Amino acid sequence: MYTSVIRPLLFKFNPENAHWLTFQALKLLQSIPFGPATLKSFMQPVEDPVNLMGLTFRNRVGVAAGLDKNAELLPIWKSLGFGFAEIGTVTPLGQPGNPRPRLFRLPDDKALINRMGFNNDGLDIIQERLKNRPKDYIVGGNLGKNTATPNEQALKDYLRVFSGLYNLVDYLVINVSCPNISDLDKLQDRKELDTILKAIMERRNQMVIQKPVLLKVSPDLNDHQLMDTLQLVADHRVDGIIATNTSIGRVGLSATKKRINQIGNGGLSGLPISERSTQIIALVKKELGNDYPVIGSGGIVNEAQAKAKLDAGADLLQLYTGFIYQGISLIKQCLQM
Image (cartoon, rainbow, N blue to C red; front, side, top):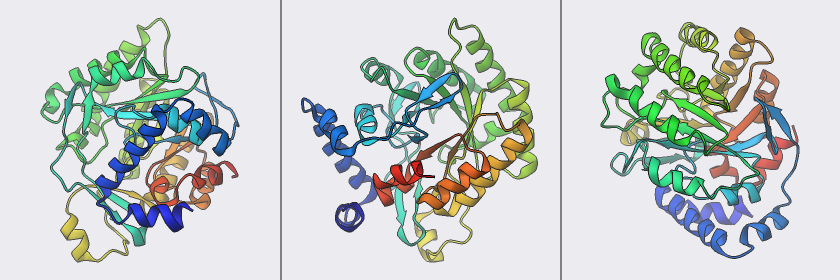
């Protein structure tokens, strides 16, 4: 029903408007007494627990950061059958993000290009929402910096969001790899990343309860850059990797060059980045060991990509673009692998 009826209807709208309409409908359902419970009884979510990083996930398929930036629909994700959800990217101050249009579909490629720019309600508002989150559901928090914050002061933003979310989420993710914030990718350079990882892990180690901290890496890192990054991850004892973020690459797309030029800058997600994401999962496992936690995210649009990432060593999976194209059936497809 989704691919034959709902998706064609939603795809008649501008992508960001379609996202807004979908969220409004889901928020309305969530606000109705017994709405999430009724949805859960209809969906019959799969309970297939995964123990990782000291946490028990309901199943291995979660919501990737970016879909629910502001922690508005956590009961709905749980009812739909996602085993966990990652909110954000969260910045200290709320910000509108980049000018529209900033989200584009490439249907023939089963892909999206976005330059949203960390649009979110800001730490204070998101903190209040998280106080009412489902208590028996794993929620991660994705950390970022405000666009107006220069890289020289970025660490203050990361530490502020880290401290503000720490008692309200189950794991935290350092995001320095999103291509949609000017010069953010420079924080992936060895010196800058070393400073950020050192400070955040020191802050975490001061906590009474030490929650997992993960690093989300870019698919655009070459193997040498990835090895440098993983050395820092090992040095600072970061608890896990999310592979991967979106890409600035445009190789091998079915969309015309004219269309790509019309869209302009932004992070590419979906099927075109799946292979590189899977390669990075395998490289992380090879470098850091089979027991090192890795969440596979990037290009999972059907069970084949899910299987490839699990075969490469991914412990958990996250969906975003594939969920837009395939709907909720993709969750159970990924769980059948």
